[in-house]
Every structure is written in C-alpha cells, then in structure tokens.
Image (tube, rainbow, N blue to C red; front, top):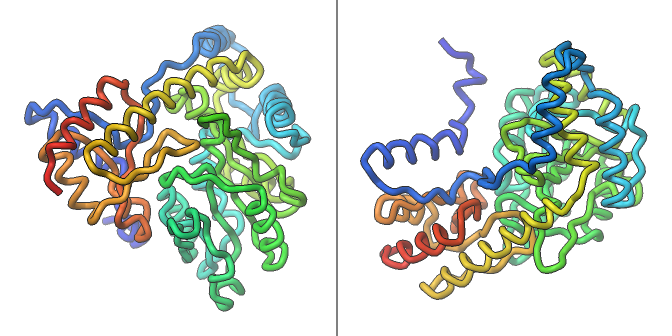
Length: 382
C-alpha cells in the first residue's frame, strides 16, 4: 500500500517514546518524562497577548506571504543584529518557517539530486536523515565522539563522498550531546564548504538556552558564512513556543530562494497571527529568556549532582536543556529506567549509531520531579 520511500523511513523516535509512555501510564505507572525536549514552562504573557490581538484582526485571516511578512523578517534581522552582531537584509536573507524542522525537512529538496550525498552529524536530529531520504539522497554520517569534544572531524570524510556531497547539516549547541562549538570550528566549516562546494545548514535552535555565563555564537558570525549557507533558528525552545510552529532561516539569499521555491509548492506559509506573536517575542523584553535559563540551570545542577551521587559519570552542559550520560548499553539502560523506575530517557542510538553508549535526559520537569527521578534511578540495577 505504501511507497517504498515510506517503507524505508524508520519510525519517528519521539512518536515511539510517546507510545511507550502511554502504555506505562495505562498500567498505572507514575511516569516521569525526561525524554522529549518539550519545555514545560509557559509561553510568556506578552507573546500570548500579541497572538490574541492578532487573531482578532481580520487582516490576519488571509493567506500569508510564502516567505513571511516583512515586519516579522525585520524583527528577525534586528534580533540577529542585537544578539550576534550579524547584519541581515530582511527582504532576501530571512525566511519565516513553521519551526526550524520545516526548513530542515525541505531544504534537501532544493539542492539534492538522487544519489547525492548529504553530510550530517551523528548522533543528530533524526530529520537530517529523513529529509535526505525523501530527497532520494544518501546520508554520510559524521561521528561525534567524546575524544573530539563531540565535533566532527571533517578531514575524515572520504574523497569519493565529498565529490558527490551537496549539503552539510550540523548543530551547535548540539542536540543530543549538549556540546558547544568554538568560532574556530565555524571558520573551519566555511573554508571546507568553499573548498568542496557545499551548502551549509546550521541548526541553531538551542543558542539561547545557556548557563554559567556562556553565550553561544551564530554560524553567520564566521567570515564568509552567508556565502556558503544558512542558519535555521526556532522560537520553540527560546520562548517556550514548541506548539506555535514558528522559526526562521537566515543567510545566503541564493540558498533561501531555493528553500522558498520548495516551500511555496508544499505549504502556504506561517499564519500571520503567529508571526505577530513572533515579533512580540523577538522585540520584547528578553528577561523571560534569562528567567527560563535560570530555571533550567537549577534543574541541570539537581540532575547532574543526583546522578553523580548514585554513581554515574556525567558532565554539566553549558547549553541546551539536555544532559548526555554515558552508559554501557543505551537500549538496556533506557528500558530498565522505564520498566523498573518509570523514568523516560532517550536512548542515544535513537539519534544515530554513534549515540550508542549514552542516554539523553531532558531537564523539562521540575526540580522536585528530577530529584525523585534520580532517587528512583539509584535503585535500578544496570
């Protein structure tokens, strides 16, 4: 019944986790979900209020512009200038997205022919690979290993792969490892892309979730970055807006033009009222972001301290709301945590083969629930 393309598609990781959670809850288990990275904090009031006003305005009830309304794109450009000192032309260097997943899922269609290679970090966001599959390309995975600070070694890519490679996906601060990248690595990526004629796609969804005074950079801060690629950004994690579906792609006008051509044929853009909410998020007080980071830092500290006390070797991340913990066997550990303790974590192999030996915790529950989770985990025999 289904196409071969769909049959080749693996089940979406987080849909599988949701099914396992539902099963346990149906059995009466008090499940503590530290699996999927969906913020439990509320969207700030000023953003909600802007949305309500915009929804009531009939001017926003029509089809939106495919690439986003100009005021939203101007707000994005202003935010990038203030946050990263990056200059963007709103007219052709900013595109509104229905979340960064939208851009990541569609961009291979613009640049990848059947049989072309897409380079993607592993472990990584599963959509890097599935979007390549839909474009009939091949994914060449770039392992992220602890000994390399979870940065890919670009020189390890085989020459025959590079000859047929069109896209490079990467993501820092990183999901799932929570690793960060220095500007020197971004500079290296720009030079590598120039040498091998690659389109670079940097997924920067977690740049604002940082701790201990760390500030994550933008790929576009690297000299020449706009000449070789784009950055996908999302309001989902920064402003607790995962359900609102709004983000942006910024950078190379040529690359964005290709993305927009694809999107204009498969969707009708972001609802204008949601874009007005996005404007409120980007141009309003950023204290809400600082407040959220303070909450996540307290949770991070509680989780890391607790896991260390029960015998796990875990590092405190500088960014994202994830903790990447080494274990002997990730599927065994995840299954035992769920079956023996009612704790949901994500097995590392769900993000790729190089994720074996790790599980990912999402610190999207209260300190009290995190402390309870650690207490339960301490009673599990691995």
